[in-house]
Image 1: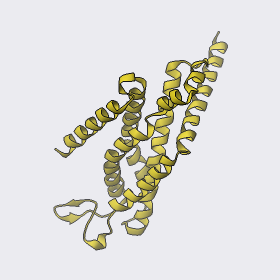
Image 2 (image 1 turned 30 degrees about the vertical axis):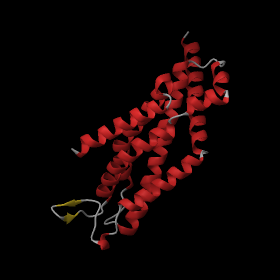
Image 3 (image 1 turned 90 degrees about the vertical axis):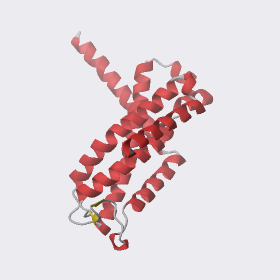
Image 4 (image 1 turned 90 degrees about the horizontal axis):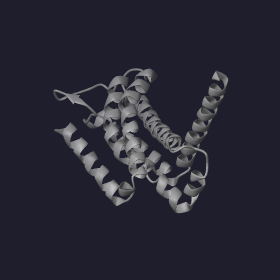
Length: 208
């Protein structure tokens, strides 16, 4: 019946939400997350150079681009996309290996959760985690805008730009991490090396 299907769908949706939020909480409690947040703040401050030094984040025809909301959002998000594509992969990667090592994997295998639902919840939690890191970087840039920027801080411009630029990057990095963790041949150093080569190739294409 339709009522039964709706109930099953509601239970599945609730279970997905619980698993995804649990994934985010576990990642947020890690020391690596604190280090990543500190690194994001430091990188953000290093990108937005004080105009008084004669340097600038962006220049056109040897003229400095004003530090408006659109310029800072696009410039910082574009640079952060390359950095977070590499760092994000290694932050998200390794959860399945930890489950196997700690024995939690056997407990998860005994639950009625399907493989597809389990992996999707891991993926969803990973994407939410990456977007949270991007939000930290965006807030750092907005603080710098208040100190060194030109014009008003336009929150919608920042949110829209970061979502359009860093959203696809987060999806790609998390998808690669979940895929590599799910394939036995790619769980170890071979997978790390393969992704690093793919990242170098992407950076080289953009630079070229």
